[in-house]
Length: 172
Image (cartoon, rainbow, N blue to C red; front, side, top):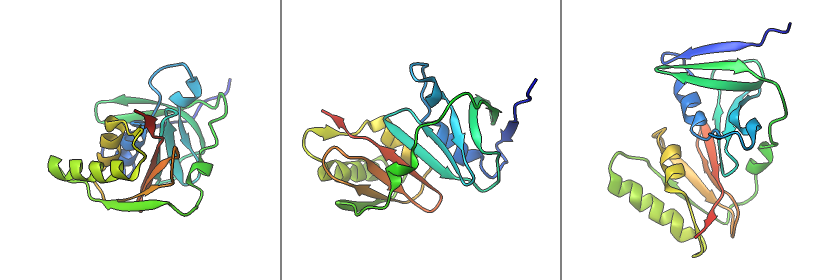
């Protein structure tokens, strides 16, 4: 019988907050069960629900693979679950020139967050929008981002030194 690798990450672990942030983008239902996994490679921890993706640059080394995460109080339990193939996500972040970009500075001041959101929406076509809960999840890490918009019906990338996120716009 093959033993699966498991990790217990408590709130003092250097990657705890980053992993909690990544897990905000995990798929919550079983319609595409592979998206219920956390993917770890040499340097990144990634989750996606098919509409958005969170990528965190790990500080410590984990064994590469797919993990089923369980969050319990101030701990994250990761149990290796290499029962399939995770989507090819790195191509979403290929370096191409953005059509437009802005800097945003998350702040607990709701007015400033609304101003940043309004700036981003103005970059987009009038029939496109963003799920505000995705926006809030990305900004919950509380750091400055460069936001890159690549044009009509294309992904919006949020990037900084330790992590990046992608949201696909939706029709409104």
